[in-house]
Amino acid sequence: MSVVIEPCSKDDLAGIDALWREAFAGDEPRHRAKAAVPAKLAFQPDLFLVAREDGRVIGSIVAGYDGYRGHINRVAVLESHRRKGVGALLVRAAEARLSALGCTKINLQIRAANHAVASFYRGLGYAVEDRISMGKLVVPP
Image (tube, rainbow, N blue to C red; front, side, top):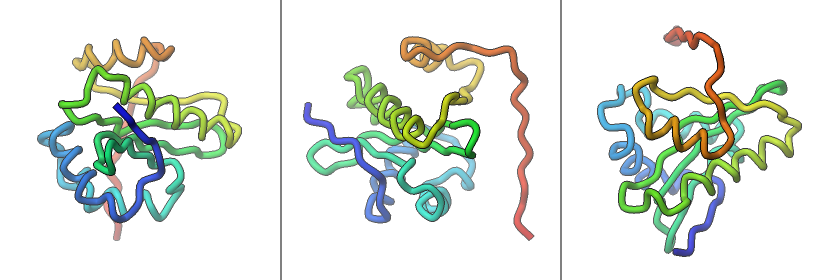
């Protein structure tokens, strides 16, 4: 398997859409690629990475840095390519980019019931912290 990790481009929209529909089935429309990809490409595009094999998008990761902490989300790998190290490659590439920006702490969120994903992140050195995750949907005017 020859996987290349590189920044996402606007030409990746269809590949990201297919990937996210498989990996995040049932997500709300606001999380779909057609909404999220252009927004992320307009802000910190070098932190939106894709994994490609033979030019095809097989994985993604969206990272961000606010000058204090880094964040990772939307880590996805096509079912056909899971358990082959693609997810770890994506996470390590995002960590390296965040570290190069001066980031010393990375946060991520996963669904509490997703034990397989929790195990994946534990294997990469992440730990469950005693925190409460809160969110608020802000609708543009």
